[in-house]
Image (cartoon, rainbow, N blue to C red):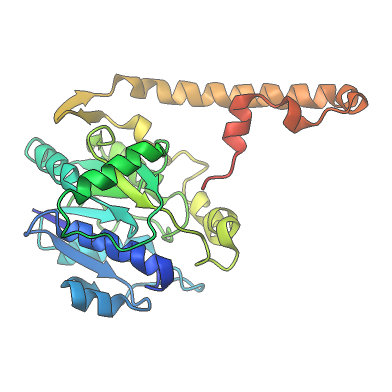
Length: 310
């Protein structure tokens, strides 16, 4: 069976509602699922006692109090009851399609990494998990909202025990980059990476960035974020789900032939950005005389690329 592990934010306000919803959805996946919660955030111990979740309060942190990813992953691999583990962010709802996908792949492969894109929805209240059809209601809302994140946004990782043991650099969690490194590492170790996005509706419950003193900018661009980016070795150790070896569709494993186009298209984008900036520089005097600004003439692909991540 499966061991799911996570680390929460403080169980306060709306975040408490979101995280309790997520944890309860995981407990319903299968009676044999093991859940481990890492960290001594406010309310964590009480929630673990109430829901019957294994609690590991001690986690190694940096000088800012942010948790190191390796501390959580290494300890989870040491104590997990099961041979298949899943790290999942504590705001993600998982449903029966997730369980079926993991079971189907684990029967075919000995070593693997499974991951998938998420769907964003707004959830304001505790979900009624005793209500028949709650999964259908959540899935319908996700599809109706139609906010599936692109392939670089990854919120859950299912892997065989030992894959990452004592191999993760000094990434801190809750900052960007480490999720893409996890995919790069599996690929570099010749471990099959499977994209579950087509068969699994993993639902992210939206929240703000008030947990960081500098808000969204601090999360994505602060000092800790910059250190995480540095560990990506100038993005050479950065991959997305576009590079997955396989994808799961209707319960069947298929080869992802398009993965070979990822690097050429990335270099093409870089080249097109360079050309675009060169044109902007050359035409700046003329544009100023005409009263045109860069934003008014920027092509659609550039506006999408520079838009902040939500």
